[in-house]
Amino acid sequence: MKSFRNFNKSFVFLCMLLFTFAWSSLIASESVKIEQTGTVIHHKNDMTSEQAVQAPLSTLYNIQGTPKTFPVLGKWNLLVYWSLFCQSCIEEMPMIQEGLKEFENDNLTAYFISIDTVRMQKALVNFVRRRDFNHEILLEEVTPYGYLTAGQWNVTMTPTFFLVSPSGEIAFRHEGPINILELFETIRYSLKGGAQ
Image (cartoon, rainbow, N blue to C red; front, side, top):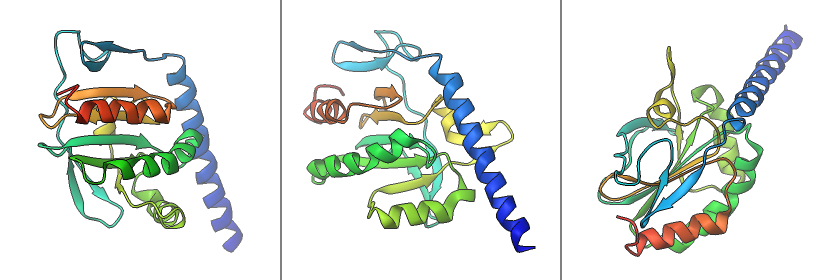
């Protein structure tokens, strides 16, 4: 019976790994371009140069089981969709956490939304504890139609980054690995009033 459980865990892990690889490969073929229009960085497929996109209001549970609604209006919000099966996510998260220290006294809230869902909650808790990660980790939910909030936010791959203004507009979006220095330069610029 014990060997069956080990086989079952290995099989589930392998299936999730294959799904993530297939999903990432499919999406990678449809590279998303980011352009800067005026002072707000927009996602080409989401908006024209004259209109900003209002961010959807979403609610998920954190790894402690408390519901959290995001983005928080009146604050800048950094949202990062990620996965334990995303190598660049795992590599970038410590650098992002270190960089966010600069903004501890600023009007910025960060949420890291794991698409690994509640099934991976124990692994996520271990990941957070081992790396002393102190930012809000939210667990994506699966519906019969796909991921709940990733669908609302049009997330097609991990990592995906959003910077949402205090008025609730998406000021920045990036899919795939990111240049951490450029990410924080965008945040600095936005917090100083460059993008409202």
